[in-house]
Image 1 (tube, rainbow, N blue to C red):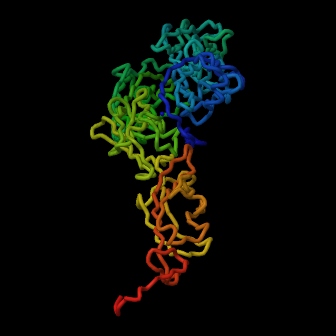
Image 2 (image 1 turned 180 degrees about the vertical axis):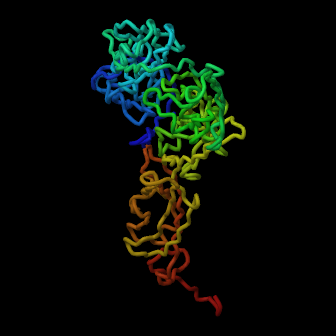
Image 3 (image 1 turned 180 degrees about the horizontal axis):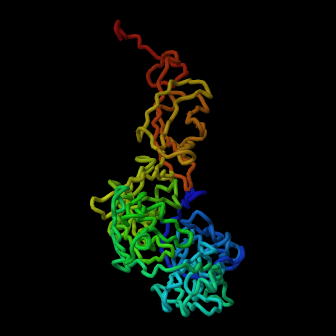
Length: 582
């Protein structure tokens, strides 16, 4: 899926409960356009209101180290934010594209965008050397051919090198042939025999022209030195050599032994082998040629992920006074081995996530990258062990990490999600990444009293303002969701309004008496206390409180005659006939 930010951006946002989908958009733009150039209007193409883009915080993500595009949230226009150089992004590749993502939040929707970068003719053909010396014997017969250096053009397709031209002269013509895949080779063809005594040196100009309109060109000055007879040219046993090498092959390993012969004798028949350098590539840093034997060995390690193959031009040159040379092509194919483990990249991580998030809610975007080719580069990715999260495949190696089970912050406040990616190489390689997702609290737990019914024993004549009891409720949520306040429910006990008897401290739960109780008048009463948290919406629970007033010895004994009222004077008539014990 970088020098500055490794293209991986972590956002901390709250993910709204949503269904998320993905779409694919494709645009084209020419390289080297000015910054600010309009690419497209994403609001129009997605058929959404511009205001919605701003409300949902549309952003443009790229796995590239440069942020080539950005978006104007006020208009929905995607515009060029950095210089786009096709040759820098996709060297030696005809088709070039940038993959970006447009991410909308609340709910999260990911739109994949492929931007095709169109080539312009901004590079001229260039010869590695601007002066080329060619020694030709005067004994060479007309029709002899001499391979010339080729020009390289960083542009591709129609803007690559399309033709070669040679300035007009009486001795040489130019033969240009296709080498396949739009490549060209140029050869000097001797049309008229040379005469060193008349003209020992010729100067020619070779011009390479690309296919642009107008075309761009580069030149090579050719110095032809006419020398005396060496009339046999070395010949390779093949015009094309092919060899395969594993990317873990040790340096110093012999890859191939070239073979060329020359019918001449002495120095005119002694062959020296060498590489012909093409363009700016110096393959002598990778391969070594024994100039005497033609043995090609591996000089430095090769990497399939960087270069899957090499094309070398080899030369066999005799040592005659008028040296002659033959040329062949050597193709070296690098065979991939599974030497790169998959890399797991995490972007758009949403943490914390609400504990009431619905199944399928997106937590993060996951991309798996494996630099190997073939089966060695095919990967599988999964979440290990988690019952709360899983991976949903989006496109090829792009995944969404989604909620797959009910979250409960009071049970698990943070999830360490282990993601493992494995390739299909032999043996397979794998890598692991741990993504930490914190769970945000929601008000899903009401305050709880230890017991549903409380019994309070109060001695009569307790002073007004005394604290009779302190009720306590516990809320397992956090912050405001766990902040509890208390109140007396507006009910009456024994036809007496409870608010005239008691008060409660809403913060501490202290129950305070508003009058002194008299056991002889009121022996028991009950009421309810409600505990409410500060969540939105708030949750509450009740507890029933039974108050029993205990008697004190606060009344003197009183003597009452039978059937008399308290405090009245009683008189009793005693008959004269009453005996002792009456």
